[in-house]
Image (cartoon, rainbow, N blue to C red; front, side, top):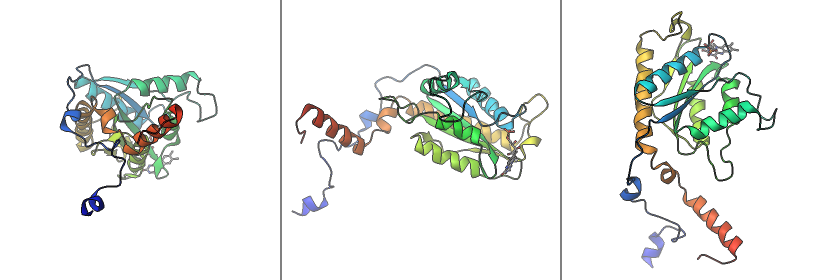
Length: 239
Ligand SMILES: Cc1cc2nc3c(=O)[nH]c(=O)nc-3n(C[C@H](O)[C@H](O)[C@H](O)COP(=O)(O)O)c2cc1C
């Protein structure tokens, strides 16, 4: 009697105790980790783009493969059908990536609309495919003013919404117009060192999680939902 009071009220057939075995894949992937980098500006000399390019260089130097999406020509969400070539390009890149970097300007205390529009075009799920779920994410922002965290905080919320594994470290480059040279390279600074820290951390978390990411984001409530749907379809009760 006492035990039943202490037991959680769960469907025992679907409630699984995670084991160390499930977290240790029999073989680890050895291919270069794949990263998609998004930036949130169409300005010719865009510091959020330059920051994303610095991040890409660092990831490549650590052995990763990177792609940087150019948001120019991407329609506003729902302004065109999702067969639009820029939407298709973005979705295919999201699918391809094992991790992402989002680099937004701060505009009026928020991420830019261009940044948000890109993420709004990436579906949380498309049939059985979930293009972002369980993938790693690093967030960065540039500002014209003093250092703030408004955009990165919002990007973190978006990362959660897209069910991504957002790493703890982040980069916020204040007065970004001072931080890049005429060739578009980031000058040596504590801001640059922070970008190195963030990319190292992203690489480590991606290597650690990519082989087990479906298990990491597998949810009891969703297993329950699918079991219910399945039992309805085949016309029997599982429990
Ligand atoms: C409409 C507008 C709003 C802005 N709002 C802010 C802001 O709230 N805080 C801030 O620090 N900088 C603000 N800025 C400055 C931008 O963050 C800065 O110019 C940044 O470099 C823009 O990113 P980009 O270089 O990638 O285009 C704003 C700029 C514009 C044009």
